[in-house]
Length: 166
Length: 350
Image 1: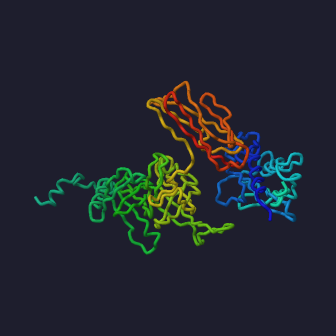
Image 2 (image 1 turned 90 degrees about the vertical axis):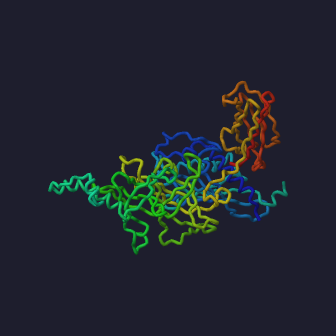
Image 3 (image 1 turned 120 degrees about the vertical axis):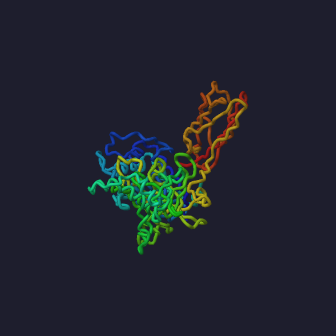
């Protein structure tokens, strides 16, 4: 049986990195269509983007205001030993279709790129043993009015019995 | 001289007709209507200008279209009055009930006419202008149509009742925006909460020349009653402030101390810093310099004081997640002025 502490920390770490990233908070909060004219939104835990990055699986309803979100969903992919388990965190980039087209490209694509720079980083992985891997990714349509990316990442984390080995 | 003769003698209008119809119209039209008002078909009503807690105006009017077999028509009336009285958005208290002028009133040069909607319910909320609880009767229509009123979510079903609410436009009601919550129910024990999802101040406006008149239409969606913040007894949503930690001050005899979290939320994320400002004020509220105080705290390993300069204290929380959910407390004491203040901050996650 895998334990979930690692997955709790994965999502909090990712949320922290996203909130510390100027490009990410700018893309989430600015509503114009030109990145060059975006205002620098405050970063950090008090950032206005804080409510737009959710560490649970969330898809906005059709009556939600025009906003963009990054949300997450965890899963245990494989746990064949008591020591190591393979876990996944799927990142959802959910953009309002009224705001998705920017002069520099799709807002969802730009956000996906920033997320990938943070996670798909072999030299200095944010969490896990031996790096974080991206298997595939695809653009999806969420509820009416929202589309974006579904990007699953996998990594290896300690299983419950691994604590006994330390 | 008989009473009839006296009335005839005292008439202000011309005793002799010119023979032209238009002259008759101008001479007798409005007087004729006033005579109608004074008969049994007229009613005394109170007219409130866009809110019911202002002094009303007592007016004689005719209320008509009183009976109907169709429900929607039974909550509508026509009101006839002298010209220049009615405005869209006014409340009319008639026969003990509150009605709302819903249409743009106009006249035929004899009398003024408008449509009234029966206010079916009253909502109460804390005024964003005054901070006091205010009451607004509203007209409402259920816009859920033939839905079940429930939305199926991943794990639970939640209420999804939708209404259209009409409320007079004024400087107070226009401040109520999306996500504003209120209670609306006849079940006072377990009232249903609603939140505004759309504010439409335009569709029921009556033009720039009557900027202060008109109605606001809200689309509202059923929300969950929150026992922690909603007051069912007063029927006011978000009545109780959230139980954040905060600051507490004990003033001296002549000097007070104010301790302020510059973020205003009394929360500190792990690994982040927070600025706390200390100020001294005299009895007139003027800031005093120089600042002379000492700090008392025991954060353990949960946080450290990074700097303390010119009344600005910077605290940095530990990077460790084990302190999440704990409070740290700092006491600022001025021995010189005999005052002190305490601030309590919650360590939170990102």
